[in-house]
Amino acid sequence: MDHYRTFHMLERLLHAPPKLLHQLIFQIPPSRQALLIERYYAFDEAFVREVLGKKLSKGTKKDLDDISTKTGITLKSCRRQFDNFKRVFKVVEEMRGSLVDNIQQHFLLSDRLARDYAAIVFFANNRFETGKKKLQYLSFGDFAFCAELMIQNWTLGAVGEAPTDPDSQVDDMDVDLDKEFLQDLKELKVLVADKDLLDLHKSLVCTALRGKLGVFSEMEANFKNLSRGLVNVAAKLTHNKDVRDLFVDLVEKFVEPCRSDHWPLNDVRLFLNQYSASVHSLDGFR
Image (cartoon, rainbow, N blue to C red; front, top):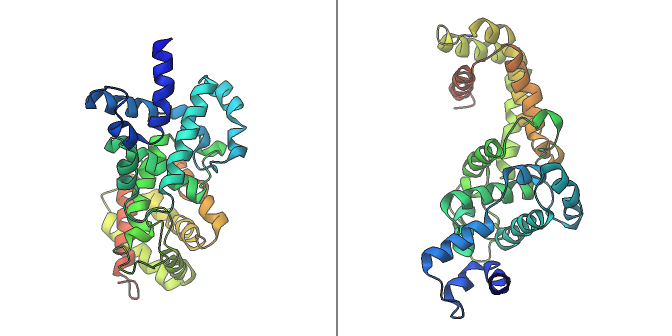
């Protein structure tokens, strides 16, 4: 009973971990404090996979009974994990600067756990659809990997330094997608609208990859459809609904065609790298 009472008193401090470090009531060594924080904010992949991309609101919280039954995770644990996600989101959603750094500073999490929470916050803010049946094969780790790359390359924080003007309204720098960048992606439509440019792009990619791809003939035959799929997904990202459906569209327009032709993963990487490099070599895209 003493242990339960102690942990009940500790829990309110764990809601704001820096308070645990500075309190004088409990004599806990720093290493044990770090362990307590890390364990309290740990989560089950099966649980996060069910709520990833959903709004962290009362509506989602009502579904925790069903999620508990589906995943076999106790309802109390589901509530703790959901409340932790929501708490971190509320604290960092309007902060400038690095999302991972802000999470580490305010919740004292390890680098790996802070990066996972950054992915959860990023997905919750942009409301990416992850629950569709065709996305079920993707793990939380897959989505977290994508989130990290998108934060590094697609957000306001990725396109320049933090604003020097203290009154600037550019907040959420690692949380919000850069609207100007998404608007610029619409210019890619010329790659499939202009037949000469499409043929030139195909020629550049095929010349560079000849003899390097195991699925070269399939790629060459299907290049226009693959290019059209990628460009159409990119060009629609100025609309919130299409941003939410990004992963659904990528699976439908690119992943499934490659999978049906049995592309090895390394061939996919080679193709995408060369596809991008060839775009940059075209007039007007340098």
